[in-house]
Image (cartoon, rainbow, N blue to C red):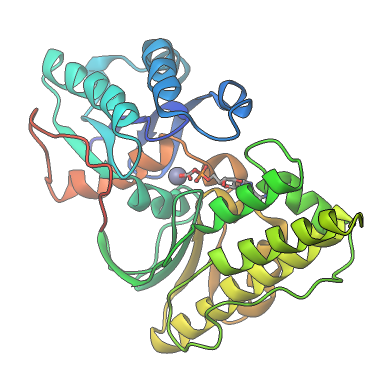
Length: 333
Ligand code: KG4
Ligand code: ZN
């Protein structure tokens, strides 16, 4: 059969990314332009700033992706794009680019759910085996998702408040770490001592939902209290205790999910999947029981290759969109 080469766009948050993916498994190019530096001084992503960056970067990234992959528009089978969830202004830039190319080159358009993309990043490592369990942990999401067959998702657990990456970033901000703080907390967590007790929210409730605002507030209160009484706390110890608790919550809920839904594979996806403490804990807990896939770091954060990987599933099912495809900021499965 002829190779299916898909040009994919991702612009849901603060990375502009364009990729070329072959048959849903092979990355021919994965260009990622990050804007983190422009947002750092604001302590988080500023939507208006993000949209402007996407406008400035997207054509350059497209040209570079095609050049890197050594393919032309005539080699493409389809154009794919993230249409949600994410920042509406940012999503619109990717949509506009993808629709323009789809129209100009008469290529089918495939709208991709960003979360499905994060899960299918695993397909770029090893083919998915069904049913698969996915733990999606990012700056905007904390979800346990069952993938019963290609492209069929069921959310088993969701966050009731903050996403786990958001909790890392907010705690990090209190510790004086630049946005995004996850990576530095992860480093500190390996240098400090586990000396603090924070509440391990939702472990007393036997369900698969998450809540991270309690532990986040506990860390912030501990810091405020110390400040008031003029005590300095060891920030690395706080990072250690915080990360240990978060990892325990994620690992425990994943264990409960696997007990209820026997799975062939466990996929850990999203930016927080880069966390070393989480990787170690998940591997130790489940590594001997089923195949555990952590996409490599470059495929854990936001990137268009994962969008191209999932687009291939929709391509096979002929699930195409027309030019009325719109951004859906709160898209779910
Ligand atoms: O998936 P992603 O790149 O963007 C979203 O879709 O949200 O995830 C970004 C999040 C940020 O909150 C960042 O702090 C977190 O991933 N992160 C980490 C680590 N590396 C990135 N969190 C914990 N440990 C890490 N090593
Ligand atoms: Zn993401």
